[in-house]
Image 1 (cartoon, helix red, strand yellow):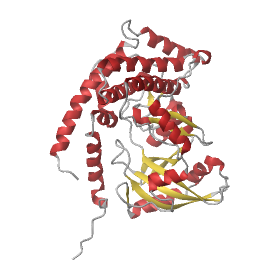
Image 2: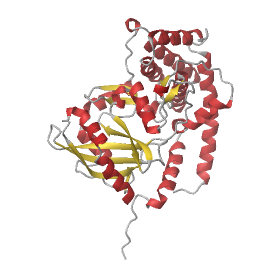
Image 3: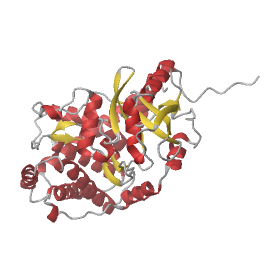
Image 4: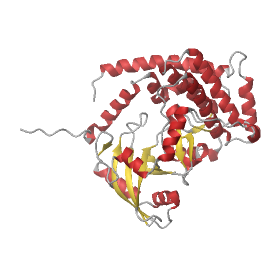
Amino acid sequence: MKHERPPPYPPHADRQRVLLSEQRRKMARSAHAYVRGATKRFYEWLDEGNHVIPDGPLIWICGDCHLGNLGPVADSNGKVSIVIRDLDQTVIGNPAHDLIRLGLSLASAARGSDLPGVTTAHIVENLMDGYDNALGPEEDKEWIAAPEPVIAVLKKAFQRRWRHLAEERIEDVKPRIPLGRRFWPLSEDERREVHRLGQSESLRRLVTHLRSRKDTATVEPVDAAYWVKGCSSLGRLRYAVLLRVKGGGNGTELCLIDIKEAVQAAAPRAPDAPDRMLADNSAERVVMGARALAPALGDRMIAAEFLGKPVVVRELLPQDLKVEIDRLTRSQACKAARYLGNVVGLAHGRQMQTTERLAWKKLLRQQSSTALDAPTWLWTSIVDLLGAHEKAYLDHCRRFALEPQA
């Protein structure tokens, strides 16, 4: 008697349990993977003691500024640049928090690459050097070259077209999303919501805004699936939707939409931030933060509602990639720190008035020690966090090893 193989996705009733188990598995892969997925642990550390961290200007910050959340993004005209590309945790807050989070991520990556501790010290110095460069007057800014791992991602981004996105995300250029380990079937309620959102005027305007499509183009959903993607977002609503655009200037074409649930940020929001900079709705908060920190990305996003929950909707472009750096040499680690520090500094600095930006730059320089060309508070914070996350990571691995696997 022939037995049918079970499908590579769980029934709807088991979806949440399987997703959370997958999240724990991903975080158990390495200490660096744990750092990337443990945003709440970072902010718990901030609340645990009297850490000496300077108060920077109130601006939109990433809130989860680690290596995986920076990468190449194309604007609506196709221009590609490295920016902060994941704004789930964005809030009005202290820019020093982004520096600590990025420094922790770089230091964790260095430890995972078996680089000596002295290299971590140089990484922190280069991070601050790149950030400091971005805050200076335009005539004093130095052009900072991207390191080899980032150049490789940029080259790949420049060469990508729709067929590459189709092959990577949906495995085929045919108008369907094949179900499997990455894409799971929708419930009837989810299908109705996809159809409702796909027919909305706000989504049509978003899609026609890109690639010089005509304003009169029509949009209709072709296929959709639940998307098993990321780490910290596992367990939330996440969908891939294939749309057909008609009369957009290039005849009929396809585009891929990412729908992602927006949840309350773990990052603390400044209580005295100006009213114009606040958003009570989580999805509106993400869109506002993206437009401030990464306009090329923010202009491609809208806030919406899906099954009664706030979601962020954006069209995926072939050039949208993560900077995945698993192994680094000493030189690459230092160059990456300086380059990415400059990227974050530009995102922060564009929100500040000139006097405010220069005052922040001066304050950071004053707090650098003579022995280490970086603020003492930054070095101390990174060292404390590395120890705290190493302990939490081992505890996580022990719990994961003892639990039944989904």
